[in-house]
Amino acid sequence: DGYHGGSSSRIFDEGEKVEARFRGSERFYPGRIRHVNRMRSTYDMSSDSNTTYDIDFDDGERESNVRARDVRARGSERPVNEYEIDEEMDRLRRKIQTAIDDKGLDFLECFEHFDRDYSGEIDEREFQDGLRRIGIDLTRDEARSMMDRFPSRRRGRISYRAFVKGLRLRRTTDNTAEVEQLLRDELRRLAEGRSGRMNYSRLFDEFDRDGSGDIDRREFRKGLEQMRVNLSSRDVGRVMERFDRNGDG
Image (cartoon, rainbow, N blue to C red):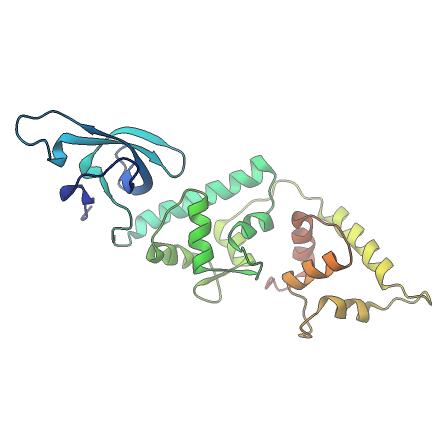
């Protein structure tokens, strides 16, 4: 593949963080040396050709007797392989869809796995960190290359809409109409003044904290919290999807 591990120049120690090919795959994955297996040789006991490694991979997989040539120091520079990035994109898609189908997560909860500051966009660092937490370890250049596969308006940023569209996510169940009606009833109650008249303008201003004339996802969530309206992150996301006509969050 044009590049090799660090084993040609050194032997790794137990507990050391490395990257290794899992079951002979082309791609290197992050892990830690669990045990060093040194085979007896009448020629050179220090040669890495006489050494294999038992490795615990960061994603929970384990493998024994990994050849030295398939192990390298973690963080070694490697070129971006666009074919591998496509494969990792498919892997990410499967992981997210499985979380939706099997664990009952919704699109917003999956998006917020990456969007840790709830800004409504995933930046480069959040994306790379989020991938690493689910066992997809990419260099910064590789993560950027994957981000370019999302239909975002701004390079280096992934909006909620681009996240869902880029991964072609499928929804399983949807009780949005029920949740939306509950929220409408609650907002109507909060907007009703002592005179019995509805003051939706005042209520809107309670959410639109920056006075921009738009309510973004962070303001919407914060406004509900301050008004003691208890909706799950999933329900908030579904309602936002219904009201967010242009899909900009």
